[in-house]
Structures are given as structure tokens and as C-alpha cells.
Length: 84
Image 1 (cartoon, rainbow, N blue to C red):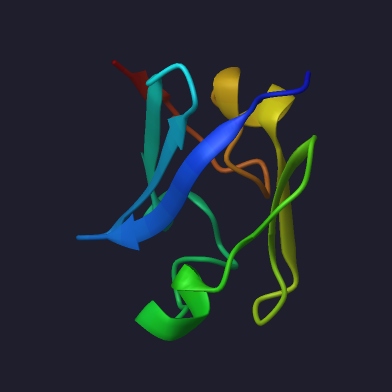
Image 2: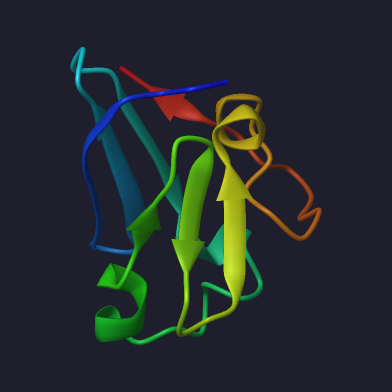
């Protein structure tokens, strides 16, 4: 899945993704065992590829396919995606 991202950032405990067509996807970092202990600086250091997101400081990669299906990494239970 190739999603065109306008912005992605960390705010108030959530990773927020905004696409070029204004779709918002967000999830709480607590749903990901690598992200949940990151500092705000580490969590905002996000690289965007055509297929997903990468946090180089935290050694974490999430695909857009996984994100839109509610998989926020590391097979955490009870994951839900919030899109608006």
C-alpha cells in the first residue's frame, strides 16, 4: 500500500499520521513496546517511506498496511486504529 503522507508526529501520547487526502490515523504509543518508552525527541524523529514509518532512534518500523489494519507493531493485544 502506497500512502502519501503530509505529516506524521508524536503528540500527547499518540503517533498522528495525516495523509495528503486529509485522512487522519492515530494510535497510542503504549500499543507498541518499542515506542512506549521513547522520549519525545526520539518519537518525533520519524522517517517516512512509500511503505511505512521508521524510528531510527528506537529501531522500529511500521508498515502502512499494518497501521490501517490495526497492527501497531510487536503484536500487542487489543490494538485498534482510529481514523477520521
